[in-house]
Length: 178
Image (tube, rainbow, N blue to C red; front, side):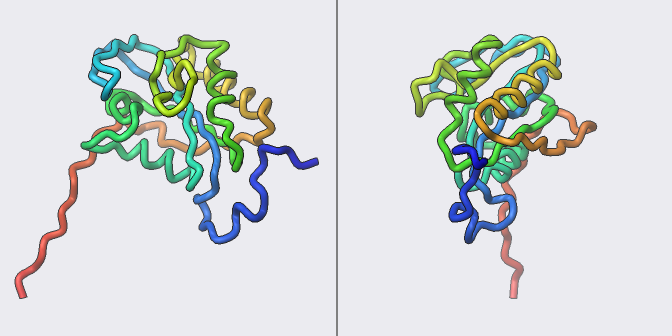
């Protein structure tokens, strides 16, 4: 039986591998409490512990996750302000062409502390960032939530030895003299 959350074949045509639409949960750890400015949300305090961020990438979910993990000097999303201080643990994705980001956030939000308005400036959700004490508990909640929405979760490998994300300097192309 095909679930409504699965990616229909016509959504895949013309897309390279890794360019499939879907939703994701990025699970990460903050080793110490911090207070940082987060765009228009202003200065926010984050305590040490485990976090889960829910997002979507309808033009390529894996590419969106990789983009977050690269870091950037000019943050675009709320998560881009927080990740340079965090240690990513795992990324869990569900391929879907359906708009399930808010349903996924709602499911996870019933179990964990929500950061109001974080990651939800384009919807009516309370927030898309959640805090919990234990990373495995958060990751398992994300897996359960994706399965509950009809998605077969995929865990993307992240390098365990990788430290906190660091913004990449902007590389400028220089011309060589003729």
